[in-house]
Length: 360
Image (cartoon, rainbow, N blue to C red):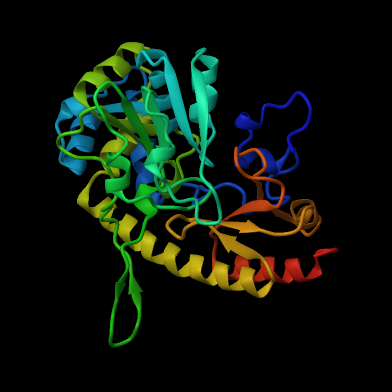
């Protein structure tokens, strides 16, 4: 469990890498897919240097994101990473009683508690971690859920999530990994699997009464250091968030990234990336099962949730691998580990390390 004095809700994948030299451990703990943005996007970011003497203008990014999702501009708010959405909701939604569906990303609950809001945890049972709307308290005026959920990888049906929406309640869905969800199409001739980012279970729509969706560019585009995210939702709720957001909260480079990654060419590239992730995830799952680990949760994210012997995380560190502890996620314990999907050669090396890990 988390050590004394440590807030487990504030533990994240980058904490697994420690304070040692960069590259000291093979990183399977952080879900960012790339060490840096692709070359064309890096050029876009570099091209903003000449604009840094002026204050940021979020207008073009709002319009680009609205066009990308086919919603009104009034439904979109660029933010300093998807995590800023949670802080803005905690400060500006007027919530009295929040229900947070766990296991999930812990920043929403941390932001709510920091704002003095009462939080009730709704714990979904494993190994499938399926969402039952009846588990959510009827009087909760804010419900927070991930889709697909980190760390379980479960993709909840949009219809199930919509069942949580009702008058007087805000439904906040964290879709940070939605652009990595594959739509699987089996080809009868050669049994290959294609993947395209059609996002059928997203709650983003032209009409979103009482609904907010948090999105992030971090994972797909290698932009953790830029802090680029956004909210899409009910225009009234978006206005409330905007009223809480500091002026010029989102940097000029982050806004430029939002415009660039909303283009048809960028979305096509993201689709190809999803296809690669799908194949690499299947390879990782195979190697983990061969090593005797149990795979739990869903299969709709660029990471895998496993359950194995206590102490495996520490033993893998001695083999040079950093994996994400999961006892900091409400509802999970020390037996659970989350592993980011990487290239097959990395998964093969991990499988070999599992075979060598003492006590495994």
